[in-house]
Image (cartoon, rainbow, N blue to C red; front, side, top):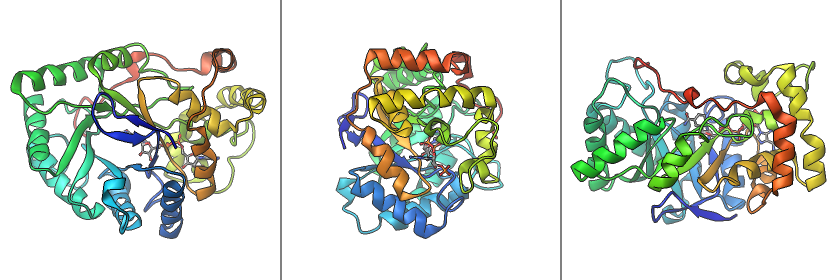
Amino acid sequence: MEHRRLGASGLWISEIAYGNWLTHASQVAEDAATACVHAALDAGITTFDTADVYAQTGAEAVLGRALAGQRREGLEIFTKVYWPTGPGHNDRGLSRKHILESCEGSLRRLQTDHIDLYQAHRFDHHTPLEETLRAFDDLVRAGKVLYVGVSEWRAEEIRAALDLAAQMGLDRIVSNQPQYSMLWRVIEAEVVPECEAAGIGQVVWSPMAQGILTGKYLPGQPVPEGSRGADPTGSTFLSRWLRDDVLTRVQGLRPLADQAGLSMAQMAVAWVLGNPNVSTAIVGASRPEQLVDSVRASGVVLDADLRAAIDEVLGEAIVRDPARTESPAERP
Ligand SMILES: NC(=O)c1ccc[n+]([C@@H]2O[C@H](COP(=O)([O-])OP(=O)(O)OC[C@H]3O[C@@H](n4cnc5c(N)ncnc54)[C@H](OP(=O)(O)O)[C@@H]3O)[C@@H](O)[C@H]2O)c1
């Protein structure tokens, strides 16, 4: 496993991270979740990503139990705040109250006294940015959070946060967590150039487009049993890709992967790691064998001819519109 710097910060992280959205405390039972965490550790993954909202706080608790007893200094634990974790007006968003309260809950569930990277899961249009940045800064000064990042923020939102932090003398954000894959490239036009210039690293999610790019979903066929596509919750997030036109194009990637001596999962992960602004690709896994497969992408470089051939095969299925990076206009 190779490691990269998280943006321009001094923190090194594994270039493939393991994330537990939709799996832990949800699609998979706890023994399978623990086996995946151990497979990740065995493969050299040191970076783990979760969020307070995953499985309504259940995913953080599963990860905390699975990592208990590991050497804390050898791990980088990332979590997030913003989406609702309770019924109240203040159980959501990026207010000072919710950030400070949610952080305490995350620390307790993750069984740790500090979070390595604490991320604003979306931009909150109903909280002054000063209030959010000051709350994050207080957590950093208290030693509860070591680094601060954001997720799915637009280029101008990231710029505003950097400018304000500089003016107010507050800790600056070091990362952004966007969706990024061969199919979903909306960060390339605006977010990546802004971040490259500012030393912000991308911590990218769904590098395999939730399993679509592994090639296991076939056009005109029922979704495979036991897959996210067959899970009642998971399938709602996957539906945008479960179209025959997309799935047919994805099958066209198989000969390219075969020729490169890679599995389709490895080619998908290596593709995102080919963007130098990417600090880590967060992969998901519902069973340990999937991690054994995807982590082999570490260190693999896809040459320019292969990248061009991928573009050609995926063609119109690729989404590039930078306006697709957005946070809810109203707090959820
Ligand atoms: N910031 C955000 O808003 C946000 C949003 C979403 C995700 N994330 C983060 O990104 C992480 C990864 O997201 P993701 O799970 O969608 O990523 P992904 O790596 O694109 O998809 C992972 C899923 O694909 C399938 N899979 C993985 N490896 C496979 C293999 N080798 N062969 C066949 N199938 C394989 C598994 O699903 P099945 O076995 O069930 O089919 C697995 O759960 C999350 O856990 C979370 O930490 C962040």
